[in-house]
Image (cartoon, rainbow, N blue to C red; front, top):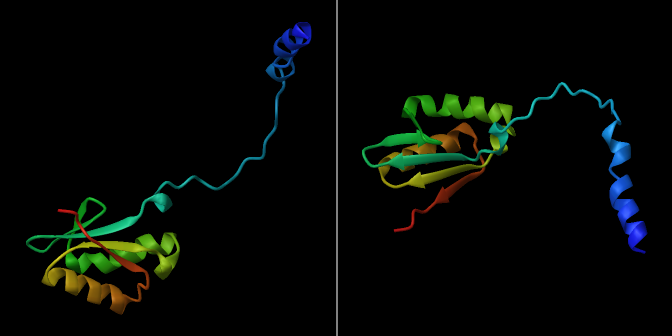
Length: 109
């Protein structure tokens, strides 16, 4: 029994050492961007951040549309965090632009 185990351990890797394989090449590139969730943060003073990048309120919708067009369109989930009047303006603009999947995040204190 021990002999069979030793033979199995020694001879099993040998056929794969010299084997070559021709796999199909794909034209698609891997996209890590699609896996990153969109998080919009409204900070005190009216500062807006889209995934750690500061953005102006006027540039928010064009930037979001360009990102979501490469993903799943208006069905892309957008997480919004913050408070105040600027948050209400942002939520109103997102709703008017047709974004249907907006989720509010609450910061833990």
